[in-house]
Image (cartoon, rainbow, N blue to C red; front, side):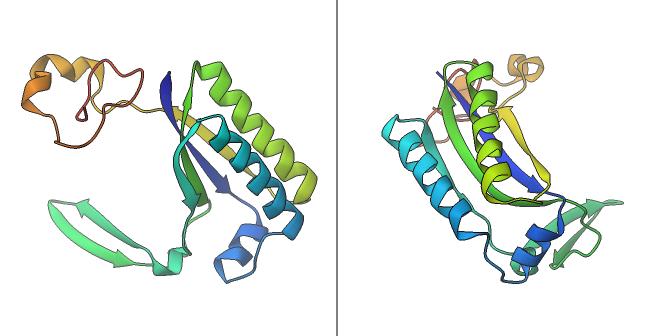
Length: 155
């Protein structure tokens, strides 16, 4: 089993209106609730949820050697991450197929919505750096190692 992060990003005006408090279509929410319940029953979901509007978010930026804390909203944003999930799959192909199924529901129950779902395998430490950080020196107590990862900051 491998852990993947799945992020839903919108480029359409629909999510921008959701940023202002408008809810997605009821049928869409019901369909995604059924899909999430099935995924949970199958033991695929580790964590997940919708994200609060960007107006309530903050960014910490490092630029020119200086740190800056910026509070939302961020008007220059062209894509909005509206939700995420951490899921377990046997393969990358299975993870991508799950994203395709989610986007098929979106297409069916939220006509006009545009965006993408990004699927990425979780690894805590890139393999090229693992030689510099022996595993016993960088474990964080209480956290599990991502499934399928050969190196990790987690157990």
